[in-house]
Length: 246
Ligand SMILES: CSC[C@H]1O[C@H](OP(=O)(O)O)[C@H](O)[C@@H]1O
Ligand code: HPA
Image (cartoon, rainbow, N blue to C red):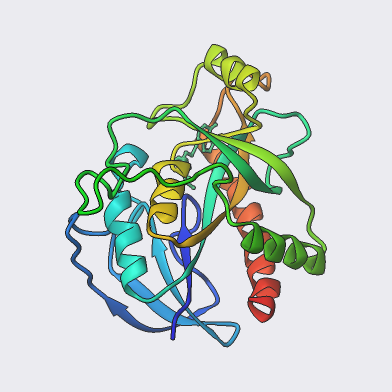
């Protein structure tokens, strides 16, 4: 039984140490997920893996079918989802290629399929979203980080922007005033959809770059890639420690 799902993001289109057993094409009432689901064993535990931008990273953040992705994972019987997401750091305390564990979200996205409750037999549904990430999963991730000797700031608010362009320096100033510590483009509606499906959900943020206007340089994808390579190595170490605890 696969109870643990992992969603990969930028820099994590495949899980290097996953021993793949099979792939499954899933159709959902909301359309197709980003690609077929990959099942396999990670450190001996069965997991299901889905890269949100597709297997060849072809889907931009605003075009991802978040509803199909989450629906497909729910359909596998998974009850817990760990998402991996590249972010820009707004807070000076968050250093490139390090990991962070968001505990809050502010949503600046628009026009995305963001709810399963368009029409529901129960009437209008409002799910509680006070704490968008699962506290139990977050605790496990913090324990795993400690076991792996990795620092992982746990007080981080994730600002979800629309993309695919990066932000202006003034937008980043605004996000900081709003209380965001990191910025990414995929945290919403993913987290809210997981909550609507009653999936436990937590995200590992990997600092890919300093957000716009936060360094003397412009944001270059070559250095984002380098930072993410180092960051994803840490994600692999973290997951190795997480599996025995999960
Ligand atoms: C500068 S890379 C921007 C790209 O990376 C993040 O992807 P993900 O959240 O899937 O790891 C960000 O949201 C953008 O899509
Ligand atoms: O600076 C950024 N902004 C938005 N999303 C991102 N994902 C990685 N870096 C960034």
